[in-house]
Length: 264
Image (cartoon, rainbow, N blue to C red):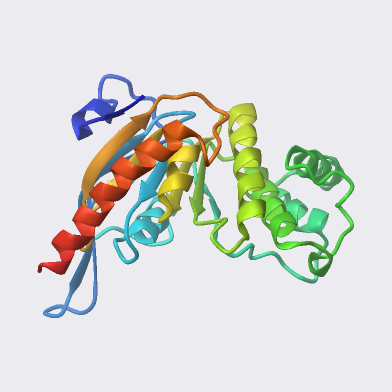
């Protein structure tokens, strides 16, 4: 069963513990007199340990919002707080350094955190084992499949030891079977680590399969149009009837937002 929720229902004003707080955030690009508003008055909290998917049509500002939360850009208006420190960010492309091995890519993130050299290899191997790449420490990037590269990228993100993991369509370029496997792996890792996840996608079924809450952004400028709590249990399958039923409902809302945008 999934229930639409209002913005007020998902805020945590009575509980100061949150992984991310986005308050009345707007973002515009361009020079004065010719500015394009991409985001308009976004208010959203991510609770500790919560898995939230941002969903919307291409160009609605999903990635822009993620970049703002990551601290890669500043909002034009509003405020963003991530009290657990700087979030970890995982991109659509793995962005691994090809001259380093899988393990060295993970160790680099540990080095940036100040983890002593003597501890880095052991910790990197633990993280690679967490993402089901035990024994891959010495493999070069060109020796890894697309799915394996994304697993290394996930291990590197987890090496940052952040309480909040930001994921910008990390599985979009993968084939359906590999993506299905990585959905399972991400769900398992999220459950094992307790990390909060803010996941951007334009794939409705992916959002419903993964998230505890799905947030639909309207088309330009991006606003919070609808939210759904997804309260049927994990693990879920992409073909589950409950996933399919809610996906149909959300898809209709997404189409309505696209039609509304097309009328302007």
